[in-house]
Image (cartoon, rainbow over all chains, first blue to last red):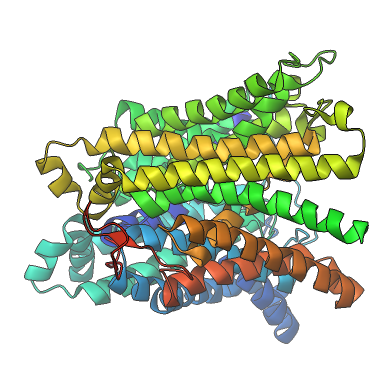
Length: 304
Length: 324
């Protein structure tokens, strides 16, 4: 029970990080982006490449930090991965979504996003292989928090949870303390009104792709660190991040964070009653429950 | 020669079954503007529904009622319709892309049930033990494969003619009216939510029909037959053929299925051994490129939608207007 809660909170922090960019994109560009979770996979794999690269070029970076299996090289690689995923998000938007946005409706973008997701996922599989990989082959020993009931936590998990919260808190400071943050919130809440007040929508769209891509990449690295890296990361995360965005209300950044934790906890606790084979379907049940009880989510406004 | 004809019959049977599913998707996406992200779930509901009702009973296994084939066939179709109705009622009043998310979720949930609920779906080993109609009477497998192809073609023609009559009827105009301008349709006293629900359920039942034929054809169904790539394949078939055009949907289904089979054969024949492991991966990338490429460069497809201007002007076509 306690183990399920802890695991749920950890998953929740990763889902939250992944859902922030998605909810902003879904509100600003008005389309459900099914290729969004592939940014987690891009982040995880770019970090894998640069982790190996840094460790080879600068051997002193390949030492683990304290009790973690996390190395200095992986921290550096994660920074590269965040930039790379942000850039990929902008490039994909320019190549595909922007052009469809200009000529067709938002559902054509949904359609295209499925195609983009299929391409990214399988190109990754072609380059890196279908097999799952790990950042470090060292065995990370779990800390025994209590023996009765048995509660195990790995140092990497504690780090992931803290780091995810830190990234989200940093983003909160940007949103609440800077002019850029105000502009971003204005665009997220009411794109038309923000434009009237001199906020350039196209600049903000690019900014959201970069920020969302960066956070998604971090989520991908964290997932890789605490679980494993495989080409199906995106496929496994797309429904949870949609569920988080819908629970919180589309367009609500804080709602997405809360939604991510709700999805994580619910999925963790569900394992107490249903076999783990059903866990991919949990976010779908959450989505259905929200659509029945509160179709606009916890903090969302009416959507048409 | 018999070998060639029998392979050709096999190819046509599968392609025609997929063409029926593509016609169902055309009613959703082409005619009504609904995005179905989980075609495979409705196809699968038809397949499993028919197997459960018409199959032989097995120990510890739900279903196996050995119902006469028409009842089993209809049961599969109704199951697909029932799933669609539940999803549609919950999502069709909301933001339009919620249907895409919910149907995608249905497909994920459906897959977990087919893989895990062994008492119901047989789990990973699937359901077998199904007596195909008239199989015993015909005797020869070759003769039966031709008969089954004929049966599938009859269903395809019935679905095609039915849909053609539907889209030319006032109701078809109503579907397009809602697709193009929901507010205008509402101002004429129409109820877009109800019409969309009806179209969604009907289209899903057509997909269920295809699924039911598929499981009848193989007398077997398992989660491996219902991988999520099926949804992508059927989308590619519609977008290549031409969304909104039923003849295009059928042509697209045959073209994409031919391309899929041919690419699989070429990779198996000429690719180095270590690449062959990634045959599926390469084919998936091709399907993705087809979908994105068509949406970018030729969203109207090979056979574009022919819009009927007025009731008296049937046959008079004009260039399709840009969607939404």
